[in-house]
Length: 545
Image (tube, rainbow, N blue to C red; front, side, top):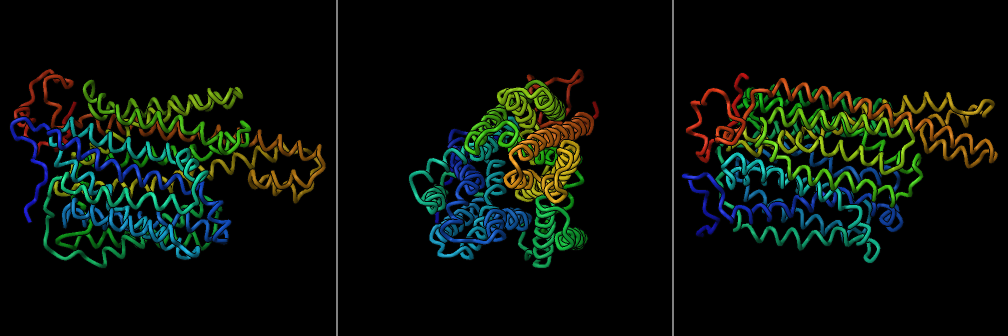
């Protein structure tokens, strides 16, 4: 059958035609949809629980099974994208996503819903690697590629930001099944628009190693699952064993890749210093911020005294700022090299974290607290948008799917590490401050329960005498403020380390288009400048300052 895909950009200019921007709009829709799904499910869980009657453990599986399934299969998805071609995998992933959404909407029991959520995570995992591989062909000029990547990431940020308000609107007028059914026409519509995307043949004809798939899937799943549970519930031998087993399987996976002619993960990607350090920067950013974001949501409710709805509305503000800053981040590349732009963003995020600390210490109004969180969000935007561009541009075009998959793995491990480290700091800070602030003479059992977490303090206050209960609540507010301060102090340290890595480690990194006249010129002419306009000049080189 004749393919009517859009024409490729002209070799003379390397500039993308108008059809490429239309294709970018098509790709943004499923990215926005999957991000929306991630944030809207939290609002729907009370309604789902009332109808399907899950246990506490089953509720957690509904919320997290999709993330675990996606993380475990992301390396496989990246390799499949490179092997069979991104357009084919994008369409297959969308059709599977629509089918899984239908199953979730019609789920007669909590077990079927958990299965559907697992299938949703497994099918969505192909979308980001396929989208990035398509963008690489659609936007051969590095500067336009940077803008396209940033806009795609902004679509993800927008989905995360708008999930709570849109979800609340849907759930107010429709049953919970609607949050899944609405995905079906969207997924089918985008799948039917496949002709708007370029046809890219896959590379490699050898079989994909099944043992590598199993090792990566079970290794990443064990590490992410165990880490999340340890962060949420504290030490458990079973969850600690899951983390250890995951680490062992990941190590075995890496060793096996060295022996294969066509590995699931091409370790040669890590020979590129910009690729490796860009992943490190993204990992550091997520690790530094994950625990702080979680603590801020709790602070707005229990310290600032906002309802869940009001706290969610306040949190939309930094999310929207992140979306706008991510879309605008490539403009920095007109003024400075990627490493400097990322380092400047990290410094800005550190300043924002300091602002949160100051707002908490001064018991400032919520607007000041959220304003400082907005500074953090704006600072992180160049790290993600430009860091993703650095990693993808430094990988061979035919390995874009695998390169994007490695970013997804780094993000999952960063979120796990951030929740574990930030959660531990928050717990220790809260427990120590709570014991210091509790009234003397309080029953030992009530004191222990109150020092465990904020929920324990609220429960203890309900059964105590009014005066004692009020003192426990006051102590809880003080302890939570200390925990928020310390988690943002940890975040500020993480952002500072990130700034050092970006400024120093990526100081010589530059994009292929950087040799154009208006892009931070060097004192000496660049002998490689003549090739900057060629469509395949996407490689990112490391040159001394």
